[in-house]
Image (cartoon, rainbow, N blue to C red; front, side):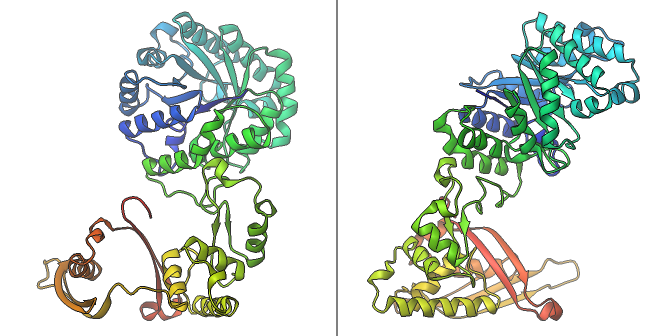
Length: 492
């Protein structure tokens, strides 16, 4: 059994661009608790009002699985524990668990704390002992441990012994600078286990792109507590990504860490945290990214349709993800058949289906050569496919439109007015509308024209769009490709 310690709300929030309000933090904490992590590090209450507000609110919310953890540092050199502001801020949260960070690299002790090596050992021991004396579970984060061990192995081990003597339940070895290689973990942990007889954990940063590998290697050598963040958010290059660590532990190593039934929630919680953090979800993430089980090459698709194991290391549904078949100029017949079935079209029932498939592939490659892109525009491919096989239902006909954009004075806003004419089932409709720019004006005019016939259009809205210049040498005369993403409030 490995216990999962989530620090998305503390270490993860230090990542560039990541922002959580105190209310966002409550929502994330609830989701993490439902997911089944063992510890949720809510923040550093001595550092900012937002974290203080979180701890005040979370006290009144019953949790099923996780223990709320407050983060802080060992006491200041000249303070007594019961008079130290940082420690008292931890106490005031009434969080059942305290994670205390202390220096284990002699360089930090002398150059940053300006303390003696022995003074630092006393700070670690009595800070932990004080929190234990008032009933807190204490986790000691040995900051910069692996760098400290390389510099002065004897002293680095002494800091762990001080934490053990103080009464810490768990000691976490931190690769704070993210520079330790996986093969360096085992020999160090083997030395640690000879001196320390309480549970060990790992906290890795991703500065060398190896945080997940380092964490897994630590588990291989006895770590029973892993710290990380959802989506790998964190300072600089981020923290160890729990969205990779958890499925590796459960699916690849057979090690329990969260309930089996919750693993299918992994993709969902990853996207939920991205949304609350106001971050674009990384489609290339292992296991839970949109591209993790996306197949584009015709040979790959043909094999996956026969046996998914040929190009998928796990069943995507195990982590709440889905298989995606892309269509592009690299597509083969298998791509077309698969996508057609997704749209409810059985190609085997079509007359001359083999000939039609070749025609579709030829048209697809021609359009992609001209700059179109269909692998991210499945709605457009659905329309193209149905037009080519004569199954497209034309819901309306665009007769014409006109857009006027003007500014009526040097200090006036730009105004846009659109007029549009459509035909629906033989009935013509002419409407006009004003908007903030020509696209908004056209959108309003078209909606006004069609809502009488298709009321559900009122639920449709633009979610995102991307514009790509296809001929950069032509500047503003260049052709552009616009990828539009819309939603009806349920599906995107």
